[in-house]
Amino acid sequence: MWVSGLLLQIPAAETVAGVAVAIIILIILASSIKIIREYERVVVFRLGRLIGAKGPGVVIILPVIDRIRKIDLRLLTLDIPKQRIITRDNVTVDVDAVVYFRVNDANNAVVKVQDYALATSLLSQTTLRDVIGQVEFDELLTKREELNKRLQAILDEVTEPWGVKVSAVSIKDVAIAAEMQRAIAKQAEAEREKRSRIIMAEGELIASEKMSQAAEYYTKNMAAMRLRELQTWAEIAREKNMIVVTGGDSGNLGPLLGIVKEKIASSERQETDTRALIREEIKDLFETKEKKETK
Figure 1 (tube, rainbow, N blue to C red):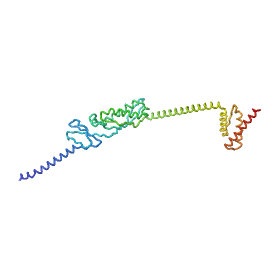
Figure 2 (tube, rainbow, N blue to C red):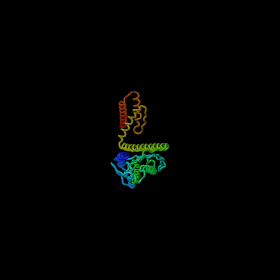
Figure 3 (cartoon, rainbow, N blue to C red):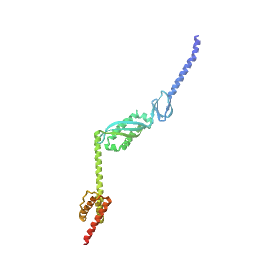
Figure 4 (tube, helix red, strand yellow):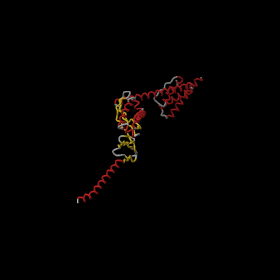
């Protein structure tokens, strides 16, 4: 009886063993097949030796024998925290920046450096302090684009052996103390005042040159001088509270303007009437003067 029972148990044991072997094979296959995305690479080490970077797509590795490390090839953003830096002209500033980089060579990023992201971050902080410490505060404010390119060139040169490509560096903010802000505001105000005085002086210079040219022209043409004088008096006559005292050949025009003023005050006239009255009085004055000279 026991022999027949043993014979019945043999197929069951073989079935269980077959199922176990199938499960083990499936586990091995599952651990051997890796699906790598387009923006990823896996660096394979076989028994400690570098095999190389593989992917994207399906990658087959040997369980237990192979060790892999997955690397992301996309552009990464690294935020540099605020760094308190003293510029070359002894101004204390707080500067932070952003670094954009990506892995260009997956093998070097794994073999040449333990943690490429941490190494790039620390290097960015020290490089930022070194570069800002070599420039003056005014250059930091006005030449920010140039400083960004300088930082990017230094970082890219150092990280190239690591298989890391620094695409860009951007200084985000420059913070200074409140006392320094007030000093900068005073400096800017003084600079604007200086510019305004220079502009006023240039205007006076141009005006004096033009007046000199006009005076030279008037000396050559006395009739133009007389017309200009008469026009000026006509403009002055509009203001009823002004008294004009003249000299030279126009000594008789003072009383004339007094007479005109009295006539304007005695009668309300329009501007055109006032001008006509002035012209009539001037004409009478010159006619009287010519009669006296002829006698």
